[in-house]
Every structure is written in structure tokens, then in C-alpha cells.
Image 1 (cartoon, rainbow, N blue to C red):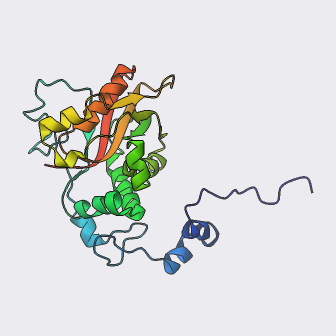
Image 2: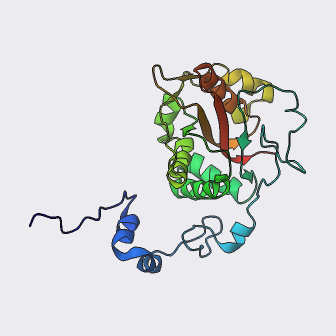
Image 3: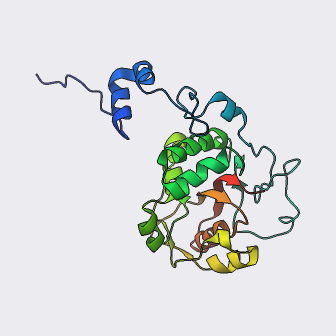
Length: 249
């Protein structure tokens, strides 16, 4: 026989559920593995590990400063960003750091709960479809020493499914963390800026698109994102945005 019998190819799979989904299709798979809310453990919505009540309670950051994503009564610029210079063109944070997002993100970052990361990434994709579209996503990298200890990079775990959902390439490794820095959460705003100043560099001789978006889990003061954006701008990137899951008010 000269022609192929089956021209349909298997999709990329993440495990048993995805492989069975290909053969059994969605209806049978939902019966075998119904979704369950990762926030409260009630039955989840179709295709989403979140229940209707928790979805309704998501802390949307619907009105925010376009330069730092700080929640505002109406969209615009906050007082701190008026007249300020930043290497970031825009910052988009779909959620405020509050329940249930403030339970899901620590589970990803500190407990290695990749399912929680996948859920947050799904939610981010839904709300970032209307944001100015970059040509690529760049996750904020961990230093190699912290990556060895943790075993994964939470920003990369958010960026990969986000890129797949929105059809954007993820340039893992394009941005390098040059030195191990102290945990930002333990520092004041001034100390945070000092801690990450000069901490990032772009991999040499790597061509980058003109418009990229940095991806991270939480933004507090924005010191890490601005330090990373400064390295990218210095390397010739014309526009750098930041996409983060949640903004600390």
C-alpha cells in the first residue's frame, strides 16, 4: 500500500490524561477524570480546575495603572508612575494578589504544585488576549543555584502554557540571571532595587524580536521586572512589557 492509512498524528502530551483524551475524546475523559477545584476541592468547571464559586470570586485587577498594574479607581497612570521613566512600556496583571490567587501561586512556587501553575496560566491567558501582543514571551529566570534547589522555575511554568494558549514563542534561556540575589520578599523597596541592579543579561549573539513580554508570578515593587527589562532594552529590544499573574496592591 503506497498511501498512509492514518494521517492523524498524536498531539504533544503531558501524561496519561492527555493521551487518553486523544483516543477517547473529551466526553469520556471528563467522566474518567472530572476536574476538581484546586482552591476548595469542590467539583471544577468543564476543562478548568476551579469551581464556579471560586471563579466568581477571582480578584480581577480590572482597573489599573498601565505602567505598573497598581489597582486604581479608573485606568490610567498612578501617582508614582506620572513622569517616571521605566524600561517597561506596559505592565499587565489580570489579578490582585488576594484569595484564591494568593493560595494558588505559593503552591506553585514553594510546593512545586505544577497543576496550580497550569490553572493560573489558563486564567492569565483568558484575560491577556486583549493586551498588546508581543512577538515572544521571556520568563524571569532563576539563578542556576536556586533552580537546582527548587527543581523548576515558576515563571517558566507559567510562560509555557501561556505561550501555547496564545500562540506565542517562549524564549527560555534568552535572559540570564548573573548572580544569586537575596529573596526579594525579605527586603525593603530600596533594598529590592539594589539587590537586582545589574542582575540580568541577555545571552550573547542571540537575536531577539523588537517586542517581548516578561512573564512572572507576582509583582510587588517591580524592581525585578525593571532590572530584567533594562537588560533587554540595553541589548536592543525596542519594547518590553511585563505580564504577571498578580499585583500586590
